[in-house]
Image (cartoon, rainbow, N blue to C red):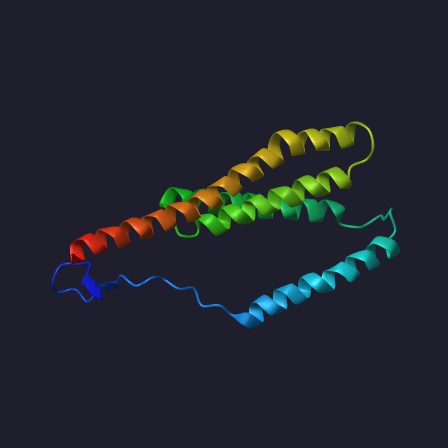
Length: 160
C-alpha cells in the first residue's frame, strides 16, 4: 500500500512495506575467503618477519596517520552536527583508527617510559575515545531503526 507523505501536488510517496537490504552472496563468500586466506598469511608473517626493523619515513607514516585521524574526527563531528546519515560509518571509522593507533603506539614503543606512556595514552585517551565512537555508531543505527519503526506505526494508524 502506498501512502502520501506530502501535500497534494508533490510526487513523493512512501511505501509501508518492510525495507529489505539486498544480499550479495559473492560479497559474503569473498570476504570469508579473504578471512580464511589471512590465517596462513598471518602465520607466515609471524615466523618470517624480523622482530626488529629500521625503516625510513617512520615519522611520515605516523604523522600521515594522525592527519588521517584528525580528518576522521572532523568528518565525524560534521556528521554529528548535521545529523547526517554518514554519522555511523564515520564514527566507526574513527573508532577503528583509534584502536589501530593505540595498538601500534604500544607495540612499537621502546621498553621503559616510552612503553608506559603509550599504555597510558591507550588506556586513558585512545580506547575511551574509541568506545565513545563505537557507542555513537551503535546508537545511530538504533536511532535510525527506531525512527523507521515509529514511522511505520504512524503509517499503520493513518491507514486504519
